[in-house]
Length: 188
Image (cartoon, rainbow, N blue to C red; front, side):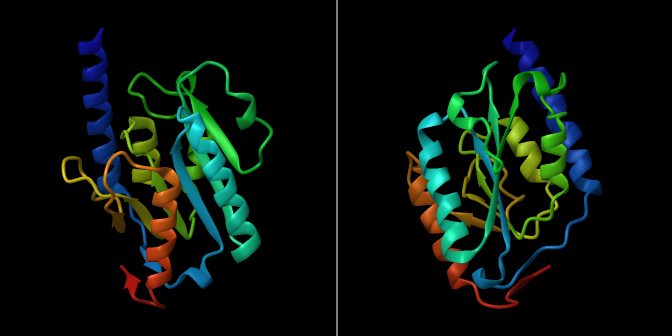
């Protein structure tokens, strides 16, 4: 069974690499005061982290007038109650993946095609459906965790933290570094 899953993942990664070669994205970031929306890609199986994300969403909205949208991957059949009926959170589940673990939901497609000012990747375990979304996202500026082992070339800014990673600390670091970048300094 594991051999079959690994083969499917290898084919899925190959398929993703071909799509990434064709994808074109304009990289741009000026400064935090210009950010109107943030997209977050998150491993929703980490239910204890949801409180931090919810507070981050509220803080960005109240203090900076930034809209935050979150897409998560949840491997279970039924979503936890805390994830339902929230406009800023959508979750894809296992039944919304194709044979190659590629997301086939309208939510994933919408997230990939939305040009967020900043996309924050909170996929510390490198779960393929989330990596797929981050990789193909047309977002202006992508932030992720630095990983010397896995390919991190999809990010425009990488944050280095010691393991075990803590979502709250990671989000604080992301905002800290975004505040340090000044107008027009990152274009590509």
